[in-house]
Length: 287
Image (cartoon, rainbow, N blue to C red):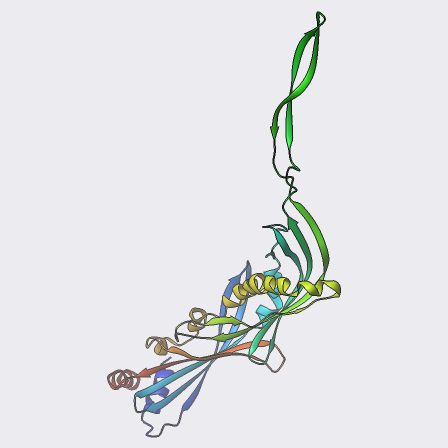
């Protein structure tokens, strides 16, 4: 990578604040997600700009996530949405995924989910409905003859079994969007948008419950899979060591669509070399 150091050193000699861009080629990162190995090609560009604070180095990583898209349905298929129809009293949705896909709209990754949903109503059993009685034989003599009969011995009063009724079931389409961002410049996080749920027939009266289920469950499933690739630690593997040593911060990150419509993620990592760091860097590069 001596050519990288040389280009950076020469750019530092430019007195204006004009950025000097240097394409660095591509690097392929391999990650295993839910038992599936995914290869992510990442294009790299380097910009060096002189500023009052020192030399600003910015590496832009452009990751093509088409492989994640093509394997996405398989990777999330092993996860289940809530299946306990009565975790407590009241009305509860349960669902089973039927299909999933990963796409892109503007600067957001978009997960589309099809599921079969059922609404259950769970109520406490009737008081005394589960009452049990134990009997024992009791014998007495009547006119000199022994006569035996069963009489109550012990009564246990308890409620009847919980009442579980399936109110309605139907197919549901849901869309969950994710934006990429950073709060600390070190890590990358996915921020889910509001869930858009398309319901049918009378099941629309349970919109809030069903949307909440997709927001808490389906979002986490998708976030876990996408987040393993959309990670600062993963992307930093592609940054040249000559820049990485200065611990660059994440300064911008966003999803976007490639020309063929596939999902991509562009992130910029920026570091500023102080005067002393720059002098040592240039000396090493120009020797």
